[in-house]
Length: 353
Image (cartoon, rainbow, N blue to C red; front, side):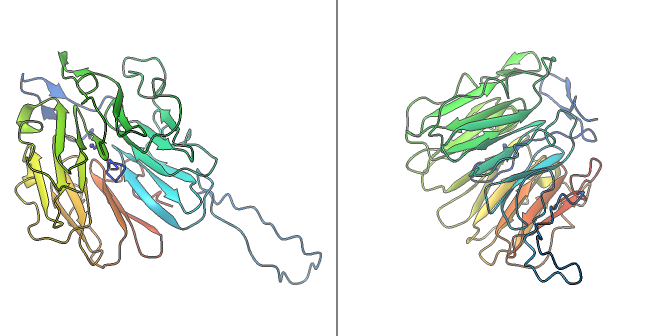
């Protein structure tokens, strides 16, 4: 739902993460319908001028746009969830916008020093300067509260975190994987939490809808959880992969040449339309579309385009980060500004800082 699967999320790395749409219903293998049950700036600058001269202000303006977070206007990373997004600014402040149905925007941390952030279905997680995990969003004891916030690991030294549907995963200081939250779906045990690989040395992890993927120390990919549409069993073999991003029903990865490989369900040609060639530097899996950056920082998106999440992608170059949400995407340009496009039903595009 990322840095991370909505997939979803980006791995941290970026992925986006996973990420269901109230507009797009999907059918499971047993015929049941999966839906999103949760679907449903102002300028906070403070004038620091203390000049007693009431005629002309000659002081240097130190205002910064605080939005829902505390940061400056230069952003370094962005992550897309189902219908909300979060970004890191240059001070490590977090700013979130879009759907706030479970306080996944309004409860974002207001301090600085965070090093990574990942947006999931209706919650998000971040790493602080000590490698501690902070999660916020859905935590109300309802039927959709599976501990994705309250069960986050304590302690420090974590190096990556990825928020998925109703679960999340992280890497500890040894490269071990820890996952928490829901371990099943549609009345079945999928094992997206309990089947996480043991051992150490993993370098990236990405949480998707009902599945997750990780990179081991050789660049090999391991995936676990629900396996319909081959989202686990079709995982590429071999080594040398440098990034992985899981989302709703599929996953994409970058190989050692910067080539992109995707697998899982091919709705909207989200797998079969994967760009060819090499030199890509980032990839992010969304609901049923994906986006990537090429060597010039140009954005390529493919898959379902029902909300123009593919066709409205910016056409210039120099972008430094890109994330695919469910029906929208966001990117950071060379100046550190955020651009979003696609589905804006909950202001996940128009409220971008």
